[in-house]
Amino acid sequence: MHIAAKYRKVKNLYFDSKAEIERLQNTLAHQRISQSRTSLDDNEYANRFDRLDGAIKNVAFEIRQSWKAIPSWLGGVINSGAEVKGGREMTVVGRACISRWVVDEILEKFFHPALDINLSTSLKTIEHGIRKNAPPPQSIEDDDALSAKVCNWRLTTLDGLRDSIHGPHAMEYRQRLSEHLVKQLVDSLQMHLHDPSPPGLLGGIQMIVDITVGLGANLPLESRDVRVWYPLPGERFDSKFMRGEVGLPPLVTPTRGPEGEGEKLSLDTNQQSHIMESGETSPLPPPAPAKDDKPLPAGKAGIGALPPPSGAMQNKEGAGKKLAGFNRVKKALQGSTHQPTNLNLSSSSTGQQGPQGQQQNGNSGSQAPLAQQQQPQPAQDPAAPKDGDRVRLAGFMACEVRGKLILVKAPVWL
Image 1 (cartoon, rainbow, N blue to C red):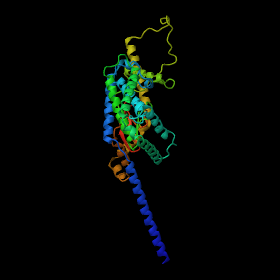
Image 2 (image 1 turned 135 degrees about the vertical axis):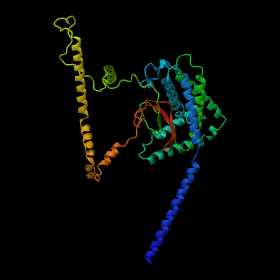
Image 3 (image 1 turned 180 degrees about the vertical axis):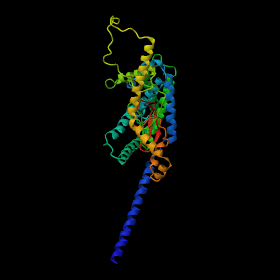
């Protein structure tokens, strides 16, 4: 009887605890739903970023032949003299400069375009300070908690400023901000362009600013932590947020690195041209001349010099040199492939034992690894970008809902 009473008590506590857990879960779900705000659909965000990318491409193409100097932060990733040619490389430079400016000077600088410029800048600084001054997250849960803290502060601030955002001066503040940003972007580009500027520059920049300001008016209203950033040169390639692009001319004169690095590139090029000119198919460099082969002093070539050999002697000496060079290349190749050759010979001799040998080793299973080695392996593109590679240049920004989904992948060149 005593045991039955304890059992009923434990059973009641279990069901009471279960009911309490369900009640707390429902309360938390309703709270999340009430706080969940979405200004635009994910597809609409993707479409607006796509329009922004197209507008930036148009302006970059229009000014590709108007550059007089490459911006300093792109000096190490753009070929010297590219601004004179004004080709595809400078189109990518224009995309990079405008995209980075849009992120740094609009999306990361102003809290909301319908507010006074000074107030909007101060609020955005506070928003960045919440994440900057927080301790580094040690887990995914910590990062989610920090994102929730930032979002709650932003939504609470917007609730307090609702009258100002939808007030009579909102459109005036937004128009004033657009004019200010257009002038700043034109001045930023004009520093590196020839005079006069292309005729369609002002109209293209106005479109870029209008699309970006529209994004800046909707992104703060999200209850999600939306992150927009521009990958700088030298950052590691991450296929989750970036996509590799091709078609950019390779660097002909790379930046100075360790001592002798630049000389190594020219030396390799000279060796390759020397091998191509000599007609040799071997990858080995030509043998170094003997130490005793010293050039004769100028003006003394005829003193004590042997007469030039006849035609037959020249043919014999040429044939002997060719044969000696062939023997050296053959010995070098045999020495480098000595061990794999023996392995292939032993395996081939094992496989050519005849019917009796096959019957004896038929149940040993020794042919399975060989069959697996003979299976064709899928070809991998050596030029495909891999995670960890360094970014040379990015042509647009990346956008993600932090920790949930990717809205825009940044096009990058490696």
